[in-house]
Each structure stands twice: as C-alpha cells, then as structure tokens.
Image (spheres, one colour):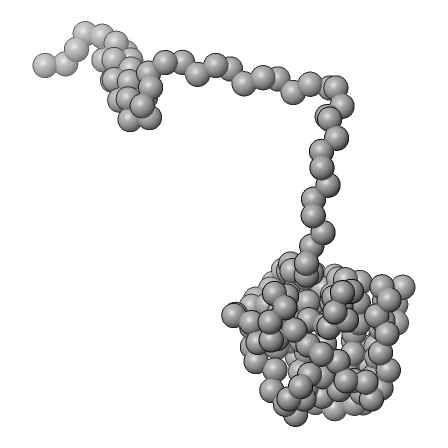
Length: 198
C-alpha cells in the first residue's frame, strides 16, 4: 500500500540514514562550527630544517639543470665517476675533465638506492648531481631523474633518460603526453640547455 505522503517517507528515510551515519562515527552531537579565517598576520613559525638531498620530481631538462650543482658527462667507474666534460657547475661545485667524483645516495650510502637503476663501471652518462657541502660527495638528483645514458661525445650523440617512470618529459617545457614514457634527446641539446641556465 502506497503512503499518502511520500515526501514524509523520504524525509524519515533520510533522517534514519543520517542517524545511522552519525552513530557509525561515534557521535550524534553536532560538531562545533569551524572558525573563520582571520586577516591578522600569522605568528612566525620556526623555519623548516634544510633538505638533505634534492629529492623531487622534475618535468624538464631545464628544471634538472637549474637544480643541479653539477652537470657532467663522463664514465662510471668502480669507485665513482670520471668527469670527461662539465656542462654546468653552480653553488660552489667545481670539477674539470679528468676529475674523479665520489658518488653517494641521498642517505649517504652507495649510489645504488632502492628504486634506482644501477650505475655500472664503463657506462657513459650525463649526470645531474647534487653536492653534499660537508663531505664534497655527489648524488644524482632524485635517483634516475638525474641520469642520461649517452652514446658518444659529439652533439648528435643520443641522450636517453635512464628510467621511463623517473624521467623528464621535455627540454624547456613539460609535455604531459610524454610523461612516464622516458625521454630521448641529444647531447647537443643537453649542452644547449646547460648553456642557457645561469
């Protein structure tokens, strides 16, 4: 039999559902209204501690370059990295062709971190590096984001992101359609971006 007042039935059902939901949350009391934001200046807070590594995602080669303390092409060795060419040095980082750099992970351990590919002796790479001011050691920016495998030293040499997932999607501008697919460019284009960044 249909009710003569269908709106009352609907209201009663809604009230029953609301009561059940509040009971499931542990309280049927009304919550106090939230305070409205004020226009008064917020009290100063303590500054956040400095970052121990430059751990984040990067969308473009330009962002990598701007963040890196050192951008260098060279050979991975058993004990680190031999610099063959410096594309860019900043923030007190200094290196020249022939220098050997110590590579560590962001946690101060060896460079082969969890979720990061392994740097093997003999590989020719361009590394985007962060320098630890205390130890002078370097680590790649956010693991594989800071590694490009290269096929040679000439401008036309292919430069390919080490990882598909941890890769930029463009040189100067982000390409959302290319995200998560790895990134391929040339060594000449990496050099050009490094030359543009001050």
